[in-house]
Image (cartoon, rainbow, N blue to C red):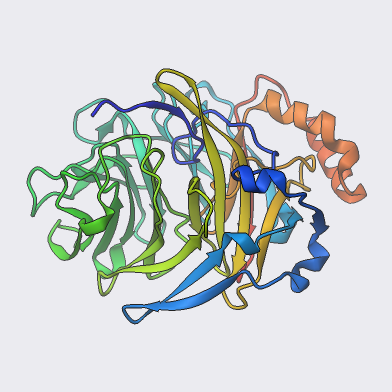
Length: 416
């Protein structure tokens, strides 16, 4: 099937930004007068979700009709240890608007244009390219997911339409492949998320459930031998690359994922693929009640479930964009929740339109060009707290528009 062109923002592929800030989610929401409340009221939020048991598994169900107000949250509510990293300015270190994976000591920037993935130390110093663009061993044309494993001293890349995960050392040198289709020879992963646990010789994979594929998820060993597999069943969809696999990689013993569809809108679930049992466990869903189902995503945080809602708008025969994006959160323990807007109080207090897609592996990240960073700081300095204003003023004085990109990093607070 020929994929339709869409403008749908997800961090994994860094598509064009869609209009944010407008707090709407369907005609019903537009007619409601939402009020904004401050984050000091978090403890007083209403209960908007309940638990049900499905095949012995507890699933959290949020009721859309109970979400009313919008909470103004500073980014500092979610993250700590915020830092701005200036990447090495050597020509060979230059990056584009690729996705970012952060570990304790490294920053991996995904490929952009004809530029391969690039590895940096956390201080911004350049280590080297990770592999190269092409179709030979260790080469790729597009990358959909990536992981740094410092303990195993390995980097893993999953290209689009992959038959294997590419393995590199921490110098970016190609080592080997982890085969993904050893059982099903014709299996190709169109878009997928993965987690490698080298210490336990385990690899978990969840992919777009195109209806011609035999499985939607599995756990295998590093040699490609399937240990557990999950058949398509009701999850299968018509092949369309407008769909995405969303994962925050928030769990230590499972791979979290939402199989987000663009045109085949349906009631669905955030899942955990348990790396020991191989079971695909439902964890969170949204009850629309009598409302029409909209485009939506579910994201897993350590202490919350986060969701987004947006409406598709056709702007030409084969082109769509989404509008009216809004976010909501549900506390896993109490079931309390609300719509919320996230403001970057470290930078300029402007709303983060990509959030929560900027959170992965326990970190918030933003890959930003120097000119854009300068513009945001110049416009937003007077909106910051006094101490932060001084820090950002000093930073602004050091930025040159010819610099390499800057990476903003914040560590997700435990329990949030």
